[in-house]
Length: 65
Image (spheres, helix red, strand yellow):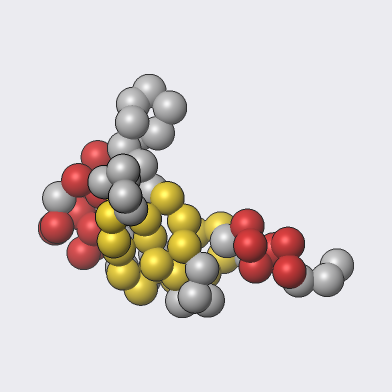
């Protein structure tokens, strides 16, 4: 289930976390070669992704088939 990004914050390890419209969160790390998200390390990059939809695993698990 896709949800829009409405904001960002950093967790206790300073990794970036997307705040989703559903109230859940999702990590959006930039750790090449596993995660290649260079946009997350700058305020401008994060601003461009507001409104972008990410898959919310929590919503998917809570939604009956």
